[in-house]
Length: 85
Figure (cartoon, rainbow, N blue to C red):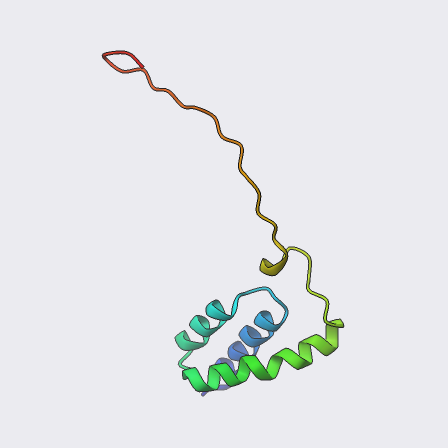
C-alpha cells in the first residue's frame, strides 16, 4: 500500500467514525482502494473509539442516524390527451 492509499484509507475510516458516511459506504470505498475485508473492518473498528473520545460521543447534526423521516406532500397530476385527461 502506498502512502497515498494509506492516507485515503485513514480518511475513509475517519469519515465513518464521524458519521459522515455509513459503514457500508466505508467498506465499499476501502475495497476500491484495495483494502481487504478483514483489514477494512479492523480499520473501522479501531477508528471508532478515537472519534468518540474526540467528540464526546456526540453525533454531528444531520448525520444519517439523526434523520427523521415524515410523510411527503403529494398532489394529483393530470395530462391532456387525445381522448381527455
